[in-house]
Image 1 (cartoon, rainbow, N blue to C red):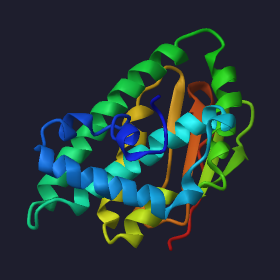
Image 2: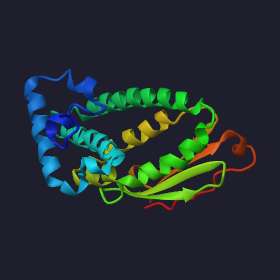
Image 3: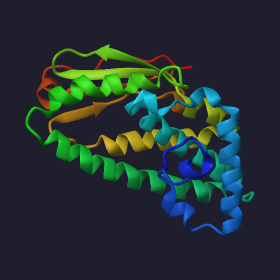
Image 4: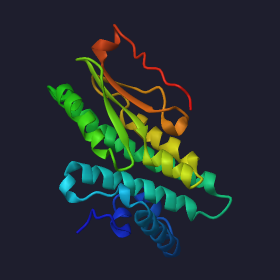
Length: 219
């Protein structure tokens, strides 16, 4: 059975598979060991299948997080910048695939209402598992949520590699770029030094008469 919170399954379900497949077995064994240790060290970030969609969302997010940390921590000294570039390329590729799926969804009749109702609810499912997410009312032509605690921000800082955070923020931008009838607006993220990640989505027709005035204070 796949999709369990064990190192083997988490290394099968993440956005860095193209990079992992290029590595020698010895390095993969090191990465497997680090991922296992991270899973054991942070049990509060696990959930079980009874959580429904939250389980699969959290599993994929933690798979990316733990794999990124393991890749970075096992990288030979002096080559971290090159690795960071490769990891960013993997996330861009994954973001483009997600964007293609979102484009198909947003092109369907009535998609905005469905996405507006579901996305904030799905995001708050991570609360208590390393995330603190609050849905934000944006009127009938928008929706949004604020993230004030994020395990990516916390663990990258804890493990001495905060530079990993912005490449995951970049993924969000790629995933949400140029969606039919929907504009993604974000003024800042925790990983780039703001006090929250403010996700806002607005219909095109609303953009003509209003702007996103949400302000963030710097940490």
